[in-house]
Structures are given as C-alpha cells and as structure tokens.
Length: 167
View 1 (cartoon, rainbow, N blue to C red):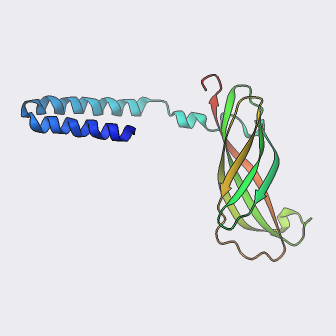
View 2 (cartoon, helix red, strand yellow):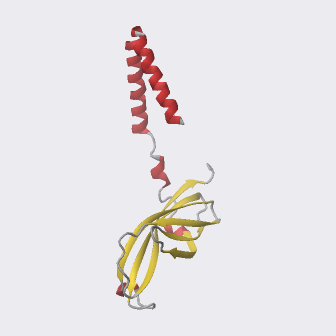
View 3 (cartoon, one colour):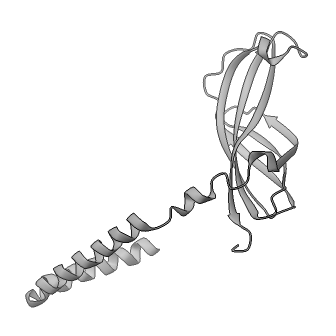
C-alpha cells in the first residue's frame, strides 16, 4: 500500500511539473534537495538491522525437545527455546543442520559422511527469561541414498534480538 501511495505522489508531482512549465525549475530544485537529504540520511543513519544480529550470545539461548522431520521437499527443525538474556527479546535464531550417513546408530559423527547441510532461520519472539516454540524450514536437495543409518545434528550459529523495553 505504501508503495502505491509513493508511486501516485511521484506521478502527480511529475504531472504537475509537466502541465505547469513555470514550476519546472522550482520542482527540479525541490526534487534535488529531497533526494540529497535522503542520501545524507541513508549515509549517516544507524544500521539498525545490523544491531539486531548477535545481541544475545548463542550461549544465552537454550534449546530443548529439538526434533527433525525430513520431508520430500522441505524439512523442519522444531523445538523449544529459552531466552536467558536479561536485556533483549529474542526474535530469531540462525541454525545449521547437518545430515549424516553413519555405519551404525551409535557411530561417532566424525566417522560418518556428511550428506546434507543447510542453514535455516527460526523466527520466535521470546522475551527475557521466557520460553517459546520455534520452527525452521530447511531444504536438502540432491541427498544420496543412505547406505547405513541417517543421523543429524544442529548448531545455533546466531541470534537476532531487540531491546525488550522498545517492543
């Protein structure tokens, strides 16, 4: 909706400048000042999305009841997450999931072949000291046939968070 409003405003602006030639110079100066101000703002504004990344150390989130479901097209890692940060609301987790072809159920993972690996983002809004469910969708394309036993593991590689006082 906002894009449509902006488009209509710009189209109206161009139409007025086209229909009233006396306003073309003033209109061009106004447009240059507007774009110049926008450029200065974008160059000096704090990169807020970058501030959200890894505000909560990975060690301050605890995952439990983690389950993996290998689907035909997409796979899903789900479970529960506890936010142990006192200052920030967790808004997402970045995870890496690896699939292994192992000789046996109890084989150490370093003796297994990695047959698939994908990164996923789990979106969950978890205020400080609280617990929520999470889910990440993953894609494992081109998996080979498993000759032994399929096993998997995961690792939290990053977090996203907001200051909980501003939510």
